[in-house]
Length: 375
Image (cartoon, rainbow, N blue to C red):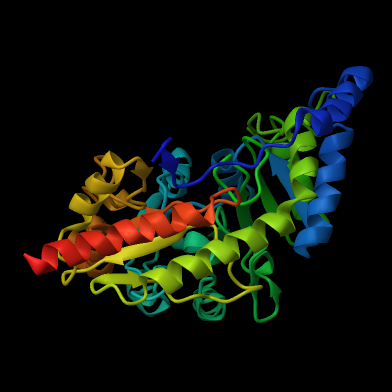
């Protein structure tokens, strides 16, 4: 490789496109605190995503923390060990005990069949993750939540634009939290949002992300500074112009990967959720036992060739020091997640990734297999 190839690279608008937005910000002299671009982006995202209300945030971690506060969640929350650490960190920041439940071997999402056994008298909510943008079994999860009077907060960091059988996946649960980090399908460099079911909930969330202020002199809650700046909102408005083009290109790359990898023994691709359902935010493969070398060996060989995949998610959240002492964190309780974390490798996927590079990556994986099998 002439230059390193990473798992994802953000789309960057041209300076010519960006300058008029910057001039408007400078002329308005409104840099933050829900200015004009902030309000425009909220409206534009509601329309694009097919949701009623969105509250923008400086990042998705603050959004997760605020979502839990907005619903007054306490006690224990059932969640997945197979995610980025922000998912469960948001629970600890609120003094909530995470209870880990195993994942489905095909979707890698929280397994609904394992949830009920983890419910106790202290359980107040479920926090699933739409892993890699593949929708959770939202109907099964909601049925359990209704039966036990639990709230559902979806970590939808990967799920921008993802659909399900009844429209936007973001309309499920009590709240859904999006990430607009630079590595995501849609980004504002840094940013996030909470999808709210009604205006009353959005008002409370907007107050919580602004220190709990109702007006200039009244504070009603111990809120935080979670507001998105005008600069980030302007970047979001620019990104939104190109997001359909980016999604289409991601689908092409996904299709190419699947075609090239389908006959390599020991390499398993996750099932394709299908156009209009998935957003192709990541391309994970599982390096199984019948591949000639381990996942870590393949990872290191790719890196040494200038290709930088990610073992995403490894280690499991449940294996980090602040979680491993929890009874639910034991590997015996999480056999599927434990196995997948040892096998997963996310390959590069982003709109500007050249098709020839995709073929080069898959050829490298195939060649490793053939060379080692012939020995």
